[in-house]
Image (cartoon, rainbow, N blue to C red; front, side, top):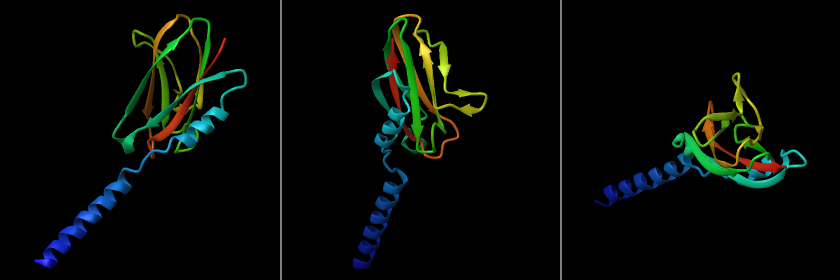
Length: 144
């Protein structure tokens, strides 16, 4: 009986250790700092965004933003796969029309700049494409 209980405890411990390794935390803070450094001079930092795909479980991560007319907004992205590789940032208006994206012609770009034409609510969607890590961060800045 002791041998049986010992085997169950060993199996349970191994399962816990393996599940912890499989679902490692996404430490996006370091990527936020890199993104912040990539913000073009003249842009004021507004917010950082954690992009944690939970090892591929979360495919879409969406944030809501309020943008003001005649203001330029800039997104800069850094990911665990290196630069902006594996992460796509897309901006949508209130009607969910795509305005700009960081993935064009099969190429990842480190972000985009968008001049707002109308004050209102916008949607910032981060998705993963060809990602190995599903982890990163982005920063938003503005300039009037």
